[in-house]
Length: 258
Ligand SMILES: Nc1ncnc2c1ncn2[C@@H]1O[C@H](COP(=O)(O)OP(=O)(O)OP(=O)(O)O)[C@@H](O)[C@H]1O
Ligand SMILES: [Mg+2]
Image: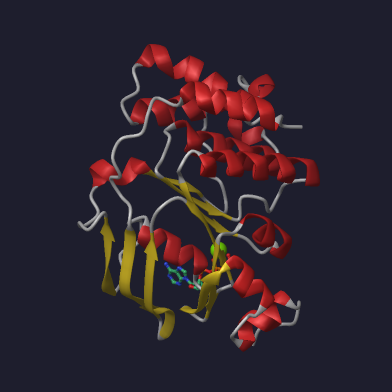
């Protein structure tokens, strides 16, 4: 299984010092999206800033993935604005936001090449790409698969590779869309330790999960989404001890959210 201690060392070895914030705070104002007469995002206001870990909870179809895509400037809302560090998003700063998608997209290349391609795409000199890629793979306990075709990895291995690839470029903010959905318990624990390490380095993480135990373990702040709206936004302890809204209570207590 992945070794979290190794992960910490590998990350520290890569830590070349952090530039001033290029994308934080990430702010969305009045974000709305509708398709075929359905409202998918309904006037969402959100602000992500500082270090820490924000968990987004909510039932299937609530709009969680869509909101992350809008904030990462991968999807244009029908109305509303997104700002990165008080300015309109632009391509040059996009690499400062890492994204691990719900369904990881693997390049038709080796495991190693999936990471080194991400590094070269952000201008890391070619001679540094291979050693840095190996360090990231070691962190995710995937170094033994470095030469394998990435698309042949298991679902959980692909999720770990997607996380290693996203971390390789040392993003300021990391969006994780259900990164644990294919992981066994040991790999889940190792990924959570890695998430803690990344958080301790000052990266802001935004994690979408359906795993309430994981949300309790990791979250500083919880956002609860329902039908395209953020219905609750609270510090983690408050949210879990005193959920204020009925959909959040139903979700925490395992009832179907209507
Ligand atoms: N580009 C699109 N065109 C049309 N409908 C879309 C588009 N993107 C998302 N949707 C719809 O918007 C709703 C919210 O989708 P989203 O993927 O954000 O849900 P989610 O909260 O991430 O759910 P899950 O927990 O199942 O991942 C869904 O009903 C989805 O079908
Ligand atoms: Mg989703």
